[in-house]
Length: 458
Image (cartoon, rainbow, N blue to C red; front, side):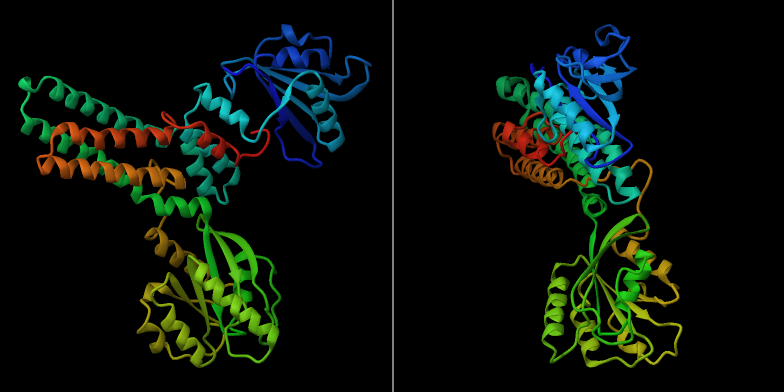
């Protein structure tokens, strides 16, 4: 347990109706009690109660704010320590005054993520659950929030723990074979190694199959909207954002720089990049915009190639169709409200039907078809719901790949008749790596790196 008591503002800085100052540690109640002016002595209240009063300077008696103080005694709190939360008025001055009084009373300012770090160190949550807290805060869509919530509740940990148990039981069996070889048969032990490692490997591979989708839900899809000038790229961005974010005119080359907007389609977060129209131009400024558009293409996870269905294909568009056919590209045929003059054969012989969508960005028709096309391209049609656990954290994905490699090496060694004491090294490595996911074996420097990404007060 930690011996010092920490405090920080737990709500977003700025003006608001209420702000919460969180205090956690063995002296949390004792430090707040002298500042709390009320008929109730904070030292005597029951745990998990809300108490009305004022925060005042114990030295001068000056009252700073009218507050509600919530007392939650450990281990029944977020950090598993004594926690006091002071709900004050949301003005910056009021909150800073309360915090300064606490710091003068001997409470230390919390480091970023220190409350969650204490919850982990005190055994209330494991490391995978702790990391999910930041994902809850940063969720860009409802589906991403659901994935993070499940992980915060321990969904991934429940997948990892049985795998670790299988491997430690296997290690014990191997140890018996090493210590008492006369009571075992090498072929039998090799068979047990193969069977157990294969079972664990299948589960690890199943988790890794969700990694790409999980990462998308967590971080979003960088989406470049490209095409020739006046194809309707900015109109498409506005239609997807359901707002007039980009300037739309009939004058080609209106968009000179990249316009960004975040949207959610069918539960998938997209970071849209509306780019300058790609064409040969003598305009210096527009040429810079075209170069930036080319750069955005290289960084994009998804490309929406917008073609003007009302005009014949231009040489620039034919080049783009060919250039982008092996990328994650959806061809968007815009302006279906006008007469079709585009040669569809040039498009269909390069792209399958499911990657071609017809819309009218101006009238907002066909956007639902585009949503379905994006979902099918990245999720095979729909995002799974129910009990599926998505692996979305980059650190977890990397560790699962390492565990997979160790398990494959162990199986290959067993097939090749390698002595079990050498195979044991790979099995132990897989067990340790899986333990790093939930925090069973992790260094202080890694913990500092993980929790430094958190905001103050969390």
